[in-house]
Length: 120
Image (tube, rainbow, N blue to C red; front, side):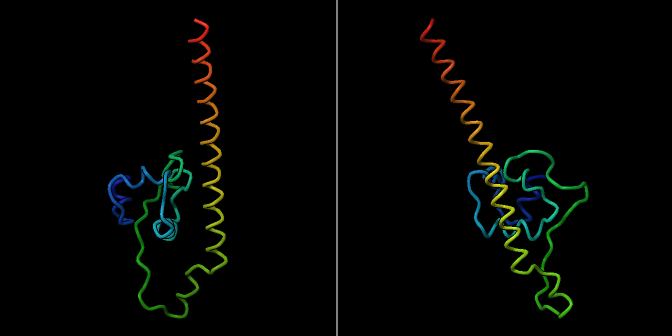
């Protein structure tokens, strides 16, 4: 699936996925998690690896408007939702940690360049 197709399916503007690492609304994040369980969050937040957990294509699923008793069990319980949100927080924290490491690396490189200019 292309990024633009994904953006259309989650009803997001063109270029939205590229801005997710900066900010994402909880409504969009919930929509993505519920409708794209095959999506790798590491790809979504850090643009690392493959987009999907497997090569199977995935399309947006519309929930039924009226729930029948057996269908109710298909939807997430509050506990499962909390676990999903905790996983998202963990993933976001990992992204933050990676960004902090990159910042530190860049600061060291900058300091090295500055030392080189002052020495020369």
